Every structure is written in structure tokens, then in C-alpha cells.
Length: 177
Image 1 (spheres, rainbow, N blue to C red):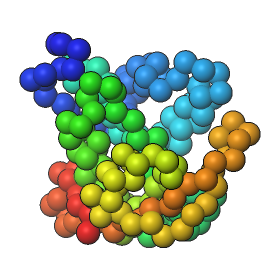
Image 2 (tube, rainbow, N blue to C red):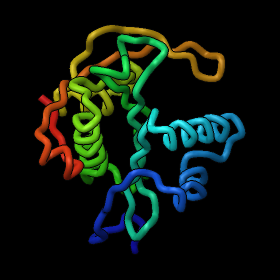
Image 3 (tube, rainbow, N blue to C red):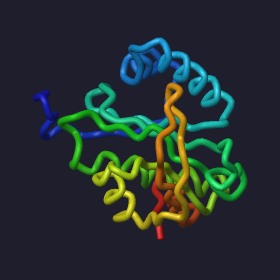
Image 4 (tube, one colour):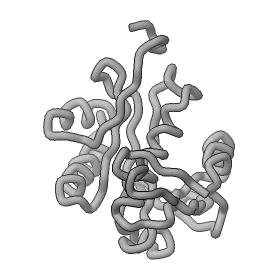
């Protein structure tokens, strides 16, 4: 496979036991982040969060999580809305549909879990991410702050309505309105 994996098919699946080492290596490398990853993996095993991976030749090229609840209930209440967290696509795989495909699968999972709304926080200077979510139909509904490593950062809170039928949700496909 070349540096960008040209011609390599991407598959998608939820994190499995066999993937944990690769997932921690992919997302971690720093004691602070590693601690958060292990908490996330524990929540994934309890179905409080769903970690989705994009793989090319079994190598992780993207990840994203759907979280049932958030400290700010406007973001995820565990009943009607879920929170999209930690969307990342490996450089060389960006702008090739990986993020959109992961979010479509997350939307299908959200429908299966009974959610009709997904939210995400994006830093206001991250114009590519804001444009990406806007293309999917997400719209800003408030501004807030996010604390990362003791630093407060402004964020734009976006929401998108998910729809799907049981056949679409069962296939892992969903859509945004």
C-alpha cells in the first residue's frame, strides 16, 4: 500500500477486543491522552460510548466515537441525542470520504440506539471542520467552552438531525437531514 493507500478499500467496524492495542497506539502516545483512552475503552465495553474505526488493510486510518451522555445535557442526554467525539482521519486519507462514511455509520448506530439528534463541538477557527459538518446538515445552536488540559477553549456547538429506517440502521448506514 502506498502512503495514501490509493486503491485500498476502507472497511468500518466498532472497536473489538483485538483492536485495543492498535487503537491506543493510534490515538495515544501521551500519558494524559492514554488515560482518557482507557476510560473510553471501558465505556465502549459498557455501551456508554461507541468507538468506530475506519481500516485499510487492517490499519486504522480513522476513528470517531458516539457518546450517550455529556456533562452539558444540551450536547447529549442519552435518550434523544448523542455526542460525536474525537473524529480523526489519518493524513493521506483525508478528503477521500472516510470521515463522511464514518459519520453515516454513526448516524445509523444513533438511529438504532433511539437517537434523533447528534451534536459535536468544533473550535471556531477550525473552518474545514465547520464546513464539513455544515455540508452534512449540522447547524450551530450555541457557543460554549471546552476545557482541555486546564485551558479553556471556545467552541461552536453544532447539531444535526439523524434519520433512517430499520433497514438503513441495521446496515450501519444513516443520514442527516
